[in-house]
Figure 1 (cartoon, one colour):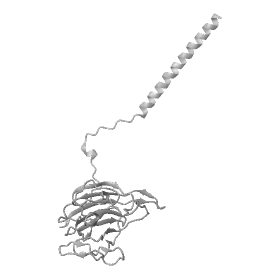
Figure 2 (spheres, rainbow, N blue to C red; figure 1 turned 60 degrees about the vertical axis):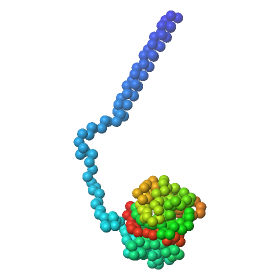
Figure 3 (cartoon, rainbow, N blue to C red; figure 1 turned 45 degrees about the horizontal axis):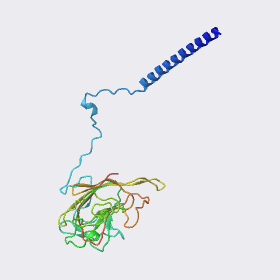
Figure 4 (cartoon, rainbow, N blue to C red; figure 1 turned 180 degrees about the vertical axis):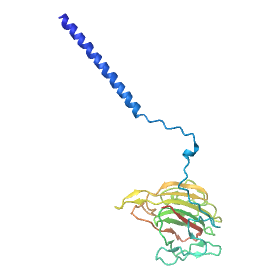
Length: 268
């Protein structure tokens, strides 16, 4: 009986030793694997030239006497409406060109739009509310600039003129309220600089990427890369019907709003 007990204890000790060896071996393997998986330290950069990129070199542009970039398409320079047509029947645009190289909405003649179609763009335009302050809310100095005939940035005399916030000047109409109201009085010109990134659709007509607007009003950021939810509808929710490039449109909302110095840079 004692011999059996001695044999049992001896076997137990041998088994325990083998298990300890296995654990030590596994630990060694794990540590080795960790060392192999650890990232190789990057070489320390001491020469500033190693982080300099010389190509491609950005193309240099120039500016004319109206501060229009040389790579822009001038949509209105004060002398002609030959870049525009009537939206309703594609005839010549009938708005009024003034002696001071501005143009004014001619109420009742309808919206006008560019002859050319555009995708993503940078648009610069300057506008001024009607000379006579008349009406209130949406009835005062109302117009709008539409991209691809679907997405409106509101133009409105919003100087001391309360209306619904997602319908005031620089709103993405019925979608995004501007961060601030930077509207000047009606005797001063307003400047819009707008970055429009067009939405994208696949071959089945499904929207794969939303568009966006960034709007700077009189030098102040008022829309900060906001998502375009769909068409800017007067009634009802936005729609997302598939489309390609489209014209830039200015709205006749029966108010004699003035425009000047309109140019666009294509971003596609």
